[in-house]
Structure formats: structure tokens, C-alpha cells
Image 1 (cartoon, rainbow, N blue to C red):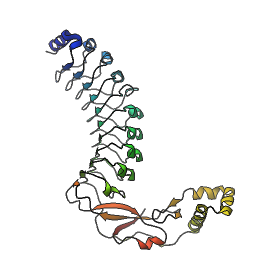
Image 2 (cartoon, one colour):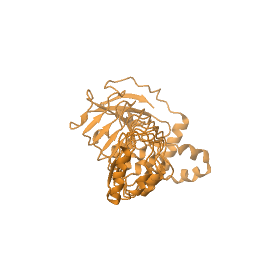
Image 3 (cartoon, helix red, strand yellow):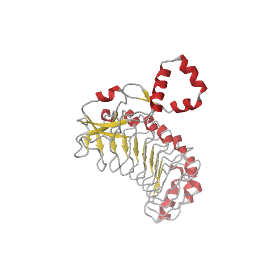
Image 4 (cartoon, rainbow, N blue to C red):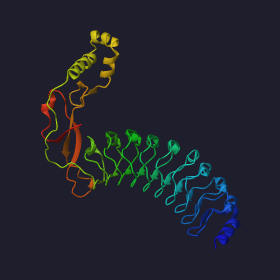
Length: 347
């Protein structure tokens, strides 16, 4: 049956645009495909193909390639010759790596489906997929999102459900067009504040992670759908502070004085600090209070503030309040905190 279909396709020569050979128990990709330079769509899913044939590189007019549910172990190098390719489906294989240079020629790729594979990481060269709009890598073994992925400026949808991710890079803020971000069933503990910069984000799924609180400004996202069930979110109830006795060390007091004086361009200290590299090293670790703007060395307290999610969010059941992380001032304004702040905890 497969042979007859191929003979019929070959008889069409350059006029053959589509070949579909699903579930034919094929163990190799037919080399005769090299005789069909005008092919636009090639569908070979649900077969037993372990690798692509070298002739695949001649199909430079191919726009859709579906090799889902086969036995591939890598995204093959031949892909880089498919310069017209827009849709690539490789789900349900055994892929654990990208062959070197794979992404080089895929400048027109719009959709990449790598669901249900064995990927533990993505190559840095993924940043070369400049036209990529939809990326789905659900059910893999990814432990991190490469920062290079965050420079795919045309990305609208990113699906990373059921992996082993533990964090989201700060560079996520560069995905300005991202509208759908799915991260369900990972091991993510903290959402970066930069996530709040995604002004076009409309669907966010973080269900089944280990997130307790959300970054400040999270409630300002214009979400339409938000799913967060299965996370150990803080409840709205006051807890006893774990703050130690409010006594600063001599080093802390001195450091604060020096840093604040330097901020005011004190010429005496600016001249003296050049002679003491140890002091320079110590104050280089300083931070600035988000409340009053003063400087400090020792990490102080943060707390949780509860706010109601916007009414137009479609959210998980029982999510009536969103716990946000807020920094408590370590200076005089520490005692002037908002009465709606709960859950003070030392960091």
C-alpha cells in the first residue's frame, strides 16, 4: 500500500504538493522523497522511523513536516536545509537533543511541537528561530528555560507543562508579545517580578507548582484566565513574626552610615574609601530599601499583602485573594507599614 502511494506521488513529479503516510508501520523514511522538490506538506506520523533520510534536505519548499509518534532521538541536522518550513511537529518521539546547527536555517518556522519527548535542556541556538510564534514542549524533562529563548520576540504562546523547571529567568520580560504561558506541574517556587512586565499576557497556568506568593504588581496583569490550584499559597491570616531582636551590629551601623554619606557625595569619605579595599568590598554588597530609599547590608524582612484578583480574571476555584510579596522597610518607616500587611517572615 505504501509503495503504491509513493508511486502515485512520484508520477506527479514537481506537481505533488502533499504526501500523507500515517500509521503505515514504516521503519525508514523513503529516499524517493528527494524526487519531489515541489512538496509542501509531508505527514509521516505514527510510524516506526528512527531517523530521517538525507534526501530530506532537498525539500526546500516544504512548509509543514509532521514526524510525530516515531522513534527519533534527536532533532536532525537536515532540518536546517528546510528554509521554507513553517510548521514542525515532532511530538511523541524519543528526542533528547538537537543536532548541531539544526536551528540555523529555520528562520521562517512559526510552530514547533516537541511534546512528549525526553529533552532535559534546549540549545542556546534556539534564539535563531526568529519567526517562532508557537512553541510547545509539554511532558519533557526540562530543568531550566534558557535565557536565549526569551529573545524570541515574536513568541505568542509558550507551553512548558509537566517538566522539572525550578525557576523562570528574569529575561522573560523580553517576550513582549507573549499571550499564553503554561507552566503547570513543574517545581517552580518563585515567580520573578519581571513576569509582571508582560503586558499582553492573557492566559497563565502555574497549577501544581510550589509557589506561595506572587510578585508585587502581579494583580495588574490583564489576564483573562489564571490557574494556580495545587500550590501552597499563603492564607489570609496574621502570623507571628520570626524577626529577631531589633539590634544592629556595629558593622551594619557603620556600613549604613558610610553608604548613605557616599550617596550624598561626601568628599571626605569618597577620598578615604579608596584606601580601604575591604570596606569597598563590604559596601558593594549593599542594598537599597524599596520603601524609603536608604541603604543597608543585612537582608531585612519581607511580608505578604493580600489583594483581590481583578474581576475579569477567569481563575481557579477558591482563589479569593492573591498573596503578594512586599518588602518591609528596615528604617523608621518599618513601624508605619500598611495595616493590611500580613504574614511577616524573615528572609
